[in-house]
Length: 427
Image 1 (cartoon, one colour):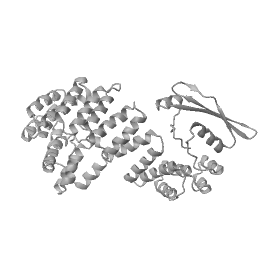
Image 2 (image 1 turned 30 degrees about the vertical axis):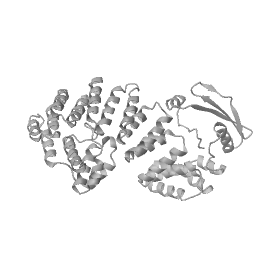
Image 3 (image 1 turned 90 degrees about the vertical axis):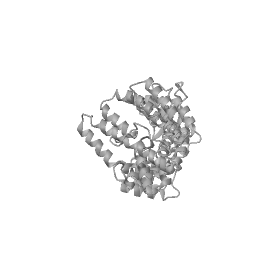
Image 4 (image 1 turned 60 degrees about the vertical axis):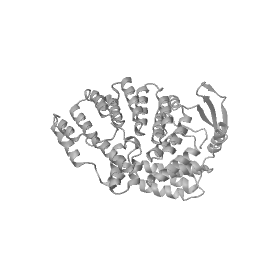
C-alpha cells in the first residue's frame, strides 16, 4: 500500500543509505497451526536504533494493513480487500485478479507494466484505457500511475505532465518530482520547472544534480540572480567549483549579460585550464565579441586555438562566425585535412537548413541544454515564413558556444544567423 512517508526500492541496506532512506523496516514471518505471524521493527537510519518489534497475525492483507498503519497512520488502504484477488495478483495472474475485483488498481497497473515490458504496446494501451475508464478504480495513486503509462503509450506530453504532477502531489516520491521537473524543463515551461526542481531540492538539499538543474531552469526563466545563487551553492559540492563557474557564465551568456559571462568563463578556465578542453577561452572570446570588442575577442580566441588540434580549421570557423567570410575561406585553405576543407566549404555554401517542419520536429525533441543550433535555425525558418513573433520568442535566449549537440560543420553559422534573427525581431 502507498504510505505518505514514501518507500524506496533498495537491494540492500547499503543501497538504502545511498538513496538517503530515513528508516528501514525489518521483518519476518512464521507459521503456526496454519496461522501466519509477522514480526516488524523499524530502524532509525541515522542513529541505527531499532524499535521494539511488533507482532501481527492473521491473513496477510489485514496483517500488513495493520503494520503499515502502525508505521504511518495516514497510509492509504491497498486497492483491494479481496484476498483471492491479492492471491491472483501475487501469482501475476493479472487478468484473473481484475476479473475478481474490477477496481483493483494495483493489478491493472501491474498488468499494463508487464505488457510494456514484453513489448506488447498495443495491448498495454488497450488495458490501460480499460482501467482508466472505470470511475471507481482504486486507488488515486494507482490511477495516476496508470495515467502516466497511458500518456507515454499515447505519446501525449501534456497528459504526461499532468499525470506526473498528480503523482508528485499524491506521493512523497522525489523521483516523481524530479521527473516532473525534467518534463516541464524539456517542454520549456521554465517557471513550472523551477518550482518542481525547488520542491525536489527541498526534499534532498544535498542533491547536486538537482541543484545544477534548478540553476539552469532559473537561467532559462530569466531569473539570473536566483540562478547565480543556486549555481554558487552547487559549486560548494565536492569537485564542482570549476563547473559552477562555467555554468554561471552560461547563465549570464544566454541572458545576454556578456561582460559577466566572460568574467566567469575566464575564472573557470583559470580554475582548471583542461576543463571542456580549454573551451572556456572560446566562450569568453564570444562573450567579449558580443560585448562589442572584436579585436580583444581575437586575442582571447587565439589563446584557445594554440591549444587545439585542427587549430587552423577552428580559427577559420571563428572568423566565419564573427562575420569575416573572406578571411575565413583563406584560413580554411591552410587546413591539411582536405576532406574537412571540402565538408566545411559545402556547409558554408549550402547555408542554414530551412526545412521548417523538420526543424520544428527536431526542436521539439531537443532539450534546452542542447537546442542552440536547432532553435536558431528554426527561428530563421520561421522568420522566412513570415512568422516574426514566433521567431522572436525563440531568439529570447542566446545560444551557448561549444554547446553539445551542435554539428561542427554548422557551428560557425549559428551566431551570424542568430544575430540576423535578433535584428529582424527585436526592432
